[in-house]
Length: 285
View 1 (cartoon, rainbow, N blue to C red):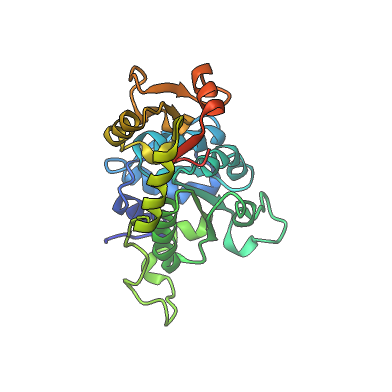
View 2 (view 1 turned 90 degrees about the horizontal axis):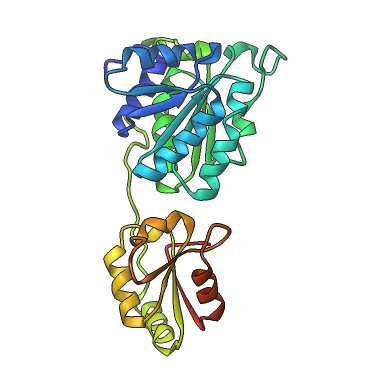
């Protein structure tokens, strides 16, 4: 791929996964990554923020509105810790976000050096996948895996990158005998979660027996607008939207009563309280 440093491998991998923008704030602990972003600015855009927390929220918002992988970047220690608030937003809203953080020099880790925070452990709760780069030949494997996990499992992945490793030449990186070149997790396979015929028949029977049916639609129904409206017409059921599913149907549709919850509408609240059958589509609300 023509990359010369470990950081170049990371940026090249992000480009391979279709990443077009990275939100972050420069710092000493990510100098190598920032330099690689500078050299590749025609292929991937870096948006500098005033505070790392904003970078994480922006990456989450980007994922929500585009459906693509959101990426945020912060330096070692407190810089990386600042990402947590936005990353928990991504975790709880099920959005694919990759967080990249720096660390100080690899041979000073766990020696009480400046900003010696083990962010791979700090991020263990918020991230589905959290790892530390151990060398230049480690980057491609973990970067592909992090992108794939964030997108396929819809959550946060985290890569912690020691600052000196970022600038190490790839060609000099030692490769273990089991780390075969070209063997990585770059293939993305989307699963098709189709219910069985028996489950569909049972669900249809429950809906047909209902006298006052309400539909609660969430993020998973964003691309099923026509189907939702058709079902609402057949069942005579209002469509109530969870916040992440607000765009399931137009706000002016005669079939929707609007949102539910703290930011919801009174008609939606009354429909939920008075229905005898609740049909939940693509939501965990």
